[in-house]
Length: 239
Image (cartoon, rainbow, N blue to C red):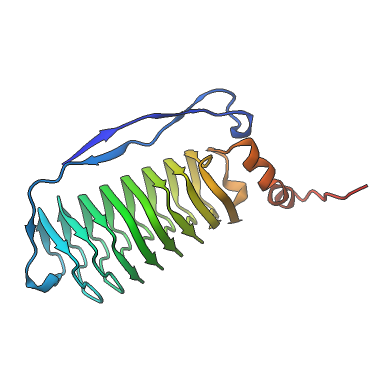
């Protein structure tokens, strides 16, 4: 089961547009998994399957169909998730460690009290998904699709995100801690108490106009100045 912790991430300076008000920090899951039973059947998944207190270790789930499946108090360690089909799946009080794969399909899935640790993923489809109390720590995720997803109490820590797509998503109490955020798309996104100060680099491909509700550092403001000027139609010319 998960224990929730909440913290305040400090004060927002003038760059955040909120004076010295507190930044509401994300609540993190602290998982305490029960004794787990190894999953049999060669690691095969079933649509609408129900998996409780199971351990999937080094399982090859490539191309398997787990649409609508529920994972409760589970651990997936070192599993291959290439083209795994898990739309509308529910991952609850679950830890994924060292998973890898390209094209994992998790559209409209629910992730609640989940830890994703040291993952190596590409093209993961999480559009329309709901993420609540999720920690993503370590690893690298390329082309993460979170369009129209809802993220609440989500922390990206010590990981690399390459071209993540948050288009039309709602982000509330989301933190980026020692995290590389490269060419992110925030088009039509809604940001509430999003702390970007720990993102280095912080690169926005689109959606700089959606930064209202986010907190950035003075140094990041300087880095974003050319993008902000272009968005405002300001020409910057030397004398």
